[in-house]
Length: 251
Image 1 (cartoon, rainbow, N blue to C red):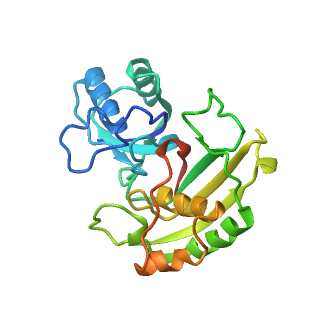
Image 2: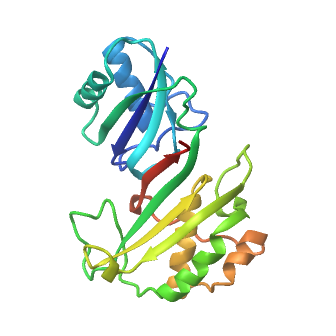
Image 3: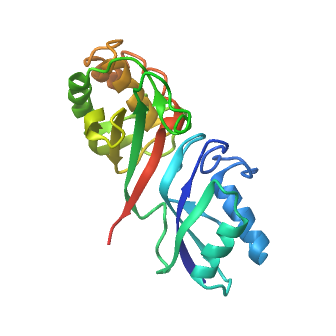
């Protein structure tokens, strides 16, 4: 069988995430739409593996997926045909033949997410689906100091929702915070998170905590108390501000 790798971008606004774990009906998910479209193209049912399991409402600029197939179509034809039949809010950027052992989920080395915050006095109607808007002043120095407490290896079970059969110990390689003067629009904050893996809602719960600290609703010391279970995490930041920007693999 052939092993195909897809690079995908999507607007997650109207989807129930990349997939719905444990659910038989995944037709309202990104992976479900691709599987359904491939079946219409070829008559073949495939199993699609994603590099990251983005949640409902979360976007992706470069999701990676892989599947095995017996179809004889060239990879360029697969890309073109999928783009022809998929909804306009899902695009296949590239398709490539991969070695048999490549697996988009199991072989991922890191995932990178970007959270975008619009701080203009009036919300931009053209970017409102992709940036979280706030008029609150953010203390970036406190946020950057707090971000350092998240980096490294920690048990992030209290920065997640739902139960996980996998280990809740993850490693965050980097959290970077850019201020408006460092971004092209001049009115945007950006929070970049890069880690070896993320639990359910973990990126949004970390961002939500940083925003609470930035607005003075919580102190930097709350992070250690949330890790230890002495304090609950704040609500997750809104999904529409979050975008998966990269899934990296070992060479």
